[in-house]
Length: 398
Image 1 (cartoon, rainbow, N blue to C red):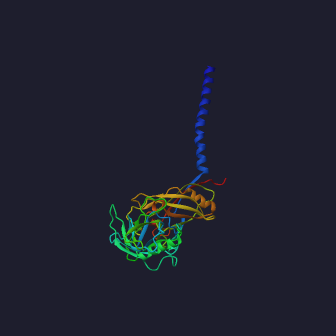
Image 2: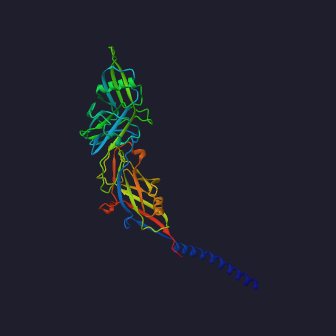
Image 3: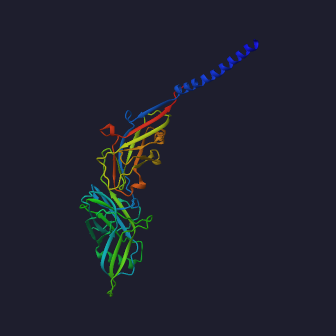
């Protein structure tokens, strides 16, 4: 009898301990979560996180673009410099019979592809230039001759296989090069030409470019027919460009939009004001979405790029901390930076204001002139403005 009572009491105590442990754990955990950690979501729909956007031009160098762009359209102007490196030093005094410039078109066209009219003039270059030259270099007084040595005005059909175009160059320019080379024996002289668009052009066309990184491509060529002094034999020499550079100038758009010009280097800065976010919080998520203003975008005959980039600039040191990517589908009008946590944390560590520099995707956008435009943070239609969502948590004071 006593034995049965002892067993019953032991079982009751054991069950009480077991059930007591199972009940206390979730209660304690629930109190910890509910009472000491708070998760908050803030969006730019209710908090003015984004204060303004500013457009500026980075003025990329001659080495920036993958192709040569020539022409003008919709306020954009594309010019080319070519420097020849194999000028012979034994042809001073030769009779120049003809000089023909040859350029190899690519399939890209920007502007009025229906009229498809390309017009430009060719000038001799008077000053030495290097791959770090910019559009300001070309704009210097006296950089090129005031008188053109050739003109082109024509239509280049878009085909799967396109033949090179030929332009007759004024012969006196080549005679001068041959004489200069013979007298100086120097390879540090200019021997260059500039291709400058004229107002008759309705398009900007892409041409093959010769660069150090793409030596297999057909460069800009000058085919010269000549006769040496006292000779009746017609000979020829093919002058090959040693380096080609391209510069694109685009119209400035300062209406508060976020503007990205792929070729001219016109990009935008987006300003942040995070005074609504408390200090010393943990950032769990930050997403920025930009909406394309399709009515203001100008693109060529290539599909739009589905990636853009952004750099967070440390305002205290002007250093770029890291790069971010926004992705869109080919049919969507939205580009989303899905992980900007470190941008928000970086701004909060330095105060409440910061700048995100919005850029084209450099690795793929150097072969087009296109302009991509997004609605700005002060657009009259609030549904089209950039949207920023921040998720954070903090712990209340004890």
